[in-house]
Image (cartoon, rainbow, N blue to C red; front, top):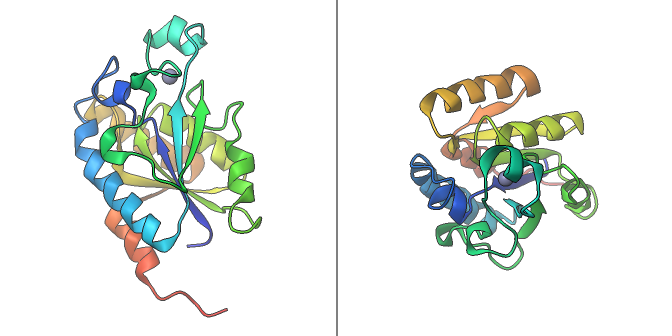
Length: 191
Ligand code: ZN
């Protein structure tokens, strides 16, 4: 798979245990951990796309209430997936990781300036932030892959319909973490 980058969306204390607690998030933690560990070994870039809200943000005021306020513990990545040296953190204030952030320019700077070509999305929620981030990746010309067992939503219905929409709208490729790892497991072609 050509020049991939892993984007981990909103795996933050508030989204997993806090004000937007999501029971179903627990089951994707080991899957994301596995993908991170493998990617570190292979030198595949890891980007954490994290909510870091101001209290007056539209999403906070008009929809979800206080969550992942910039600088608070709730806005930190859960300890199980704590970013390591060399990982990137890109803060966001809306659903999409691309909306008024430096994510696109970061992706284009990777691989010695050749840029990432494929984004592999995981995290929360399948039909919200994953969906909006997929949309903006698609329209910017990235190949969109979704780690289907490493994304989730509050309900099974939201998750399943969210995955279906990602395929229909953004031509997203749905693959399990093991399938993604096996894509890389093949020998690297000599250049
Ligand atoms: Zn938010």
